[in-house]
Image (cartoon, rainbow, N blue to C red; front, side, top):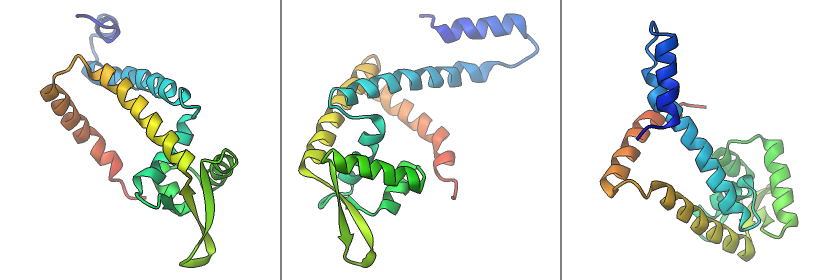
Length: 165
């Protein structure tokens, strides 16, 4: 079965036989898959009236476990956005009734961001929708193939995920 990347690689091999275009065979497919995954994520989230960034914040709080709260600094670490961006996101989610701000009992100047029951329900429903989309994308692979692919991708991404700072 031929795909768009096969055609792209063949064209580059014809036009630039002096270059080793083998990396394109893997990384162009990863890039194309990322775009398909982004579309699937947006569809799954929109069915639950959530934007991708809202899902990221809500699921960070959900994964924290009961009572589903984190400091804004912890949310920054998990979502990789700036302090100003996070403040804006918390404000918007608070207005929607999906999170609430509480005083931090261990720091009288600090706050904690807690998931509301509605926020928890929306996060759970959106996650279920996302997993259904992702299962469909992976349906052509056996369990062993999915495991092998996960292992290979982990090998590629781990160095990026473990860079200090």
